[in-house]
Length: 202
Image (cartoon, rainbow, N blue to C red; front, top):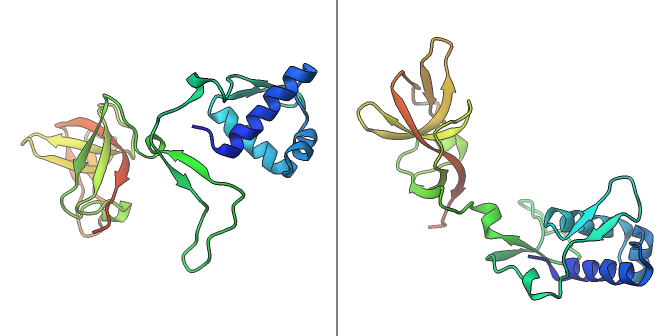
């Protein structure tokens, strides 16, 4: 989904290219749109990430518009929330030129391979996964060392821990709580890998 300013930048590049056969330079776009050159560059970077333009590195006029923001098929119905700036604890929100919409699917992955589990207990609190949180899990059985996994032990007990392979062939399931001991096992089934955490204010 494009922000209003991104759509404006995209329309300018589209119209300029139609009129002149080449893309404008950053300086030309900056003057025409009334924004600084760095801001134009950042908008182009975001448009490239979203697949709206293609750029050739190192060339000033090598911007190709991939889709028209005014065409119906360009609309994106992905749910989003506005990102209005950045804030530090104790300081005011920074000034922003325009808002940016963040697709919720960028924060919480969705699809047939993803599901939620509600956390019970405090074994992962040092990884900021607390009792009552929802973890977003990808159904995947091949974790890398250090991944937070949903592991099922031989007694069918499921647990949320960090996964490590040990030199002796065992698996170490490491809690993120200094008060708890790791679990060492040779019999474990990995049901999924944690890809995000959702927390509701209570």
